[in-house]
Length: 363
Image 1: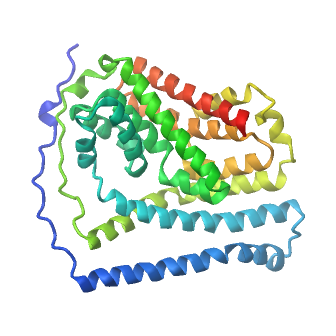
Image 2 (image 1 turned 90 degrees about the horizontal axis):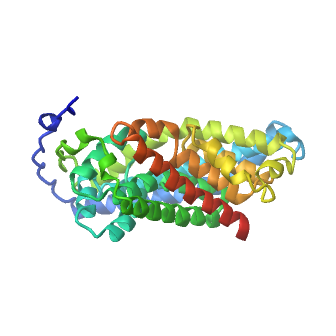
Image 3 (image 1 turned 30 degrees about the vertical axis):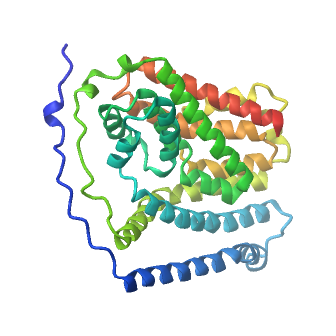
């Protein structure tokens, strides 16, 4: 059977809209003043979250700080608003940053670069560029038809879901900047090296034929042009991203609170500790078929670590859940043949295993 030609169905590029005029100096100053005041209010509220959680759990509800229910309740009351506030702040800031990197501009930045340089740029752009399973197909088509090497494209596809602002904010808020920094560095290394490795394998023939016939379309008709539009873009990012993940945040923290309050100390060390050599591959195998995002999985990781799980094993589990989820594989099957998907899972999974064992060895 001949492959279906979709060339005629490709969207025609829309003419770019006229750039809006820059804001008047008075309007720009007003935006910055309001922003500084809002940031000061954010910090003032954030500093009161811990004493407020203690007051509600131990005074209003009269729970004992030493009881399991008291520990779980305080954990939930403190971590829920803390994580949500961090998400709102960082997603808004990254949303404004994203207004400078539309998909079309991202393709232009990556196209024509040396492959090794392209892998690094693609992984870095993956952090600040919107990505989800529903956008995998059009992004992949856009990158391939723009002439971007396959390995560079995979560096982007690996970094975007795994090393995104939601994961980093949650890791920073729940586990501290050291763990967040380690996760950022190792996630980028996995994305860069895995993309470079896939590029060296020259597996372009395993991209579905119909993808090669689709013309890259679309333009920058909706790119924000001035400060007002960029602020609105950030607001919409908060509405979209936080609006979609807040339920997962609450559910994840609830599970974490239950583990924090009720799982006996040392229990997780027996199955996810450093002494169990099989814990890292088991964590990856269990994580791949799961469907969860950073908002739901990071609070669980925090609680597992508190109960004795090894850091490398826990991070390997988290990376496999976020970067190699089964739903993502189903979506990518629309554009990739099974051999390439298997290679993608194998290369990325090997990198995650290496990170897990390395962390368990040195930390």
